[in-house]
Image (cartoon, rainbow over all chains, first blue to last red):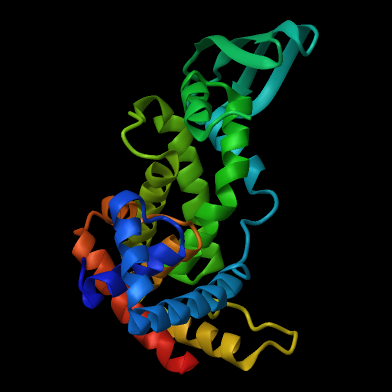
Length: 125
Length: 168
């Protein structure tokens, strides 16, 4: 049996459901016979409700961020030729990217796109 | 639905659709985490953008030893602290409170919790966020923050004590 101090340290994670196995069982067993720790759990649960409510009001990532991330990650599309359908097909395209103009070929198979090649041509300066 | 791990694995093969899905799953979470640390929307946006790009570029290096969320939050955390150093955050006033005021007549207790959250040191606020919003275990938080599990529990203990005062 764990002591009250040890149990109370674990209560936030007991309340959030991330305690597992022996620890979760030990807390449950202790709570069954300890009024003081039951009160502490009630306090933690009230806190959790209050905190979750506040955290849900945190702002979200701004709209339009994806375009900037995609431009940096993949480059800005220069052109693309698609052959076939969404399920089975082939794409050949080129992007403008910082430091080069990569040309890529993708195979589409059952809705999944797989990159076959990605040739990075360095821009002449 | 593909797991986070499968999406990272596909992103490592330069599957842009898989990366878009990862972005959709994580961008808001990363933004909110960064905002919890930085309390500044502009800087949080920068961190989120840099983090997601790092995920794309580093997907092939993801070993799968941790959860994808732990890996991504780790990147976001490093970027946040890099940015804090760059911006010499000590001299900066937060752009706005951690939580915007609720225009609805909120419960007084809830508002008190909100105020108390803003008063918490960043290290404690971070543990509270990761526990109650991201649902991370103390072991996962310990790995992410690279601190002993005892320190995670201690930060939570102090945060809980301060927050409990407003509910008393």
